[in-house]
Length: 118
Image 1 (cartoon, rainbow, N blue to C red):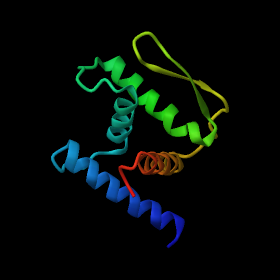
Image 2 (image 1 turned 90 degrees about the horizontal axis):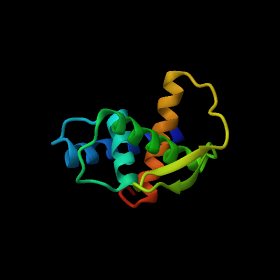
Image 3 (image 1 turned 45 degrees about the vertical axis):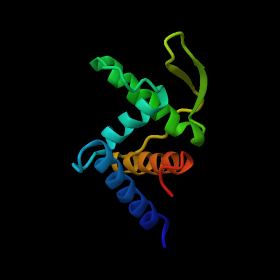
Image 4 (image 1 turned 120 degrees about the vertical axis):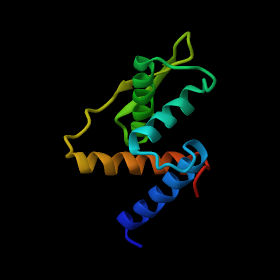
């Protein structure tokens, strides 16, 4: 199976699994799944988040997802338990479709690493 086909298959499987678990089957989009990764990384599941905090959760997720690619590295947790990352290497300029593929690949890898997806 070609790499792109395998990614597409895994992405759809992950999307279906997360959608049934968190959205009563309504399909979660890429941004919603990134948000879930940020929530998982923060680990404060019972909180209600303000709009700016939701954006920060997505930033945490992007940093964590791109860390294995060498773009970010974890620095520390602050006094409120929020993880902080530093930029190691500038992200390449990618078209929107290329960005989506990179993020889907990183998300699938994350969920495989965390044994949510096989």
